[in-house]
Length: 229
Image 1: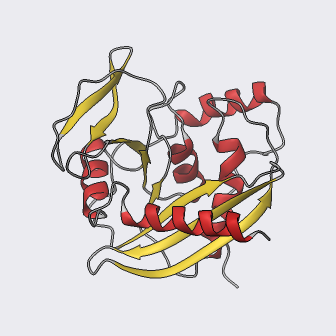
Image 2: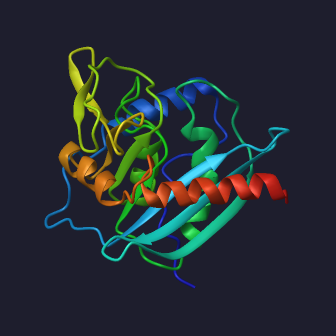
Image 3: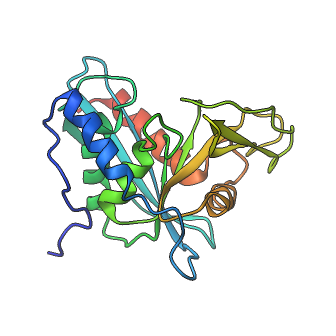
């Protein structure tokens, strides 16, 4: 059996104070440029949620082929929660289960699309950064809501965008992915630049607000929550 693609860089059973320290340490390792000739063919969409009771995390990974817009493979896992809910430290709750779902995919993937923040995070190390760094894969954060930053109103049509800024720094893009539907907050996770991140989100759209790999992962998670163990 091949070794899983993820690699441990730290423990998960840490205090909130130590978790913040880990974020600050690892943020310096995030790469903000794509690999030469980066043209992903298979993208993994990742999403997670917490069933009622709060003892587990349900995570899904969907391998989706970009050229023909087809699902290649799916995986869903339930994992025990190891970390409390603390704003800004979401990756310590979600990442272990998401990495397990990703590791269960037999299909090699070229990039990750994450329902969450990347650099658009107070310490510039959101969920997409954490997952991209641990999986050693290009990663993009495509969040449904804003965590930090200020922005103008994006135009009403698909592809319209405006910068998301925080303390004078460009941290992402507010991107309209469907006409007259609320935009997404797109940011660098790892080994991409912002223009590549924007293009990948749009390339994975098929008419819904969310990129299709993420939307399908979201549906898998919702079904798993509804059906139970």
